[in-house]
Image 1 (tube, helix red, strand yellow):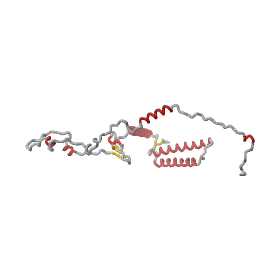
Image 2 (cartoon, one colour):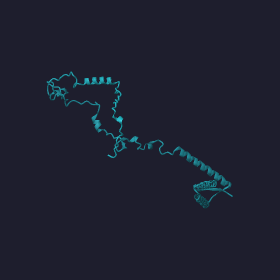
Image 3 (tube, helix red, strand yellow):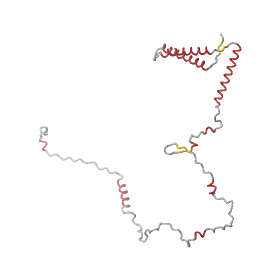
Image 4 (tube, rainbow, N blue to C red):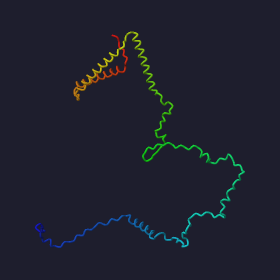
Length: 251
């Protein structure tokens, strides 16, 4: 009780006070309410009865009888009426008619070669199949007219190489006749090739020792000069390795 605080006493609190009544705003009513009420009454009034009011009551005599919905065959006058409608059996002395073909010759169909099944390819686990001819698995290209022929651009390249070789041979022959060229022996060719490879190894070792950062013009120029020299050596090595016969000018 120590925490409870009494309100301050005052004489004015004994005076009666007037009750203040707060007026509530009018309740919201939609302008479509009368239309909705009329529609609801019209639908409810139409469905108040269980089904239509005027329904023809079925007669108690018209009930579903046994076997009434089964199809019945027309009654025949005699049990042999169906057999009497067929033509009589011809005698043994009559000759059969020859050359008559029906729509389907059963004997020919039975003795003919059976149809071969169409080859198909199944490409999914669910059994989706398509004709094998359209699947791309048949090597149709082997039936082409020009299958296996050398392409025209390769024939042209071979002819150009043969022409260039022929011209080179003629040039070498003319120079040899003049005495301006001599054949490079295989020993000297191998020695030159080994020397070019040694020079390339030396330049490559020096190139590997360059710093990773080329921050000055001197480093950049030195790196470019090494790359150019290595590239020139590589072209010379490939040229000597490709041609076995080399002619040089006489000193």
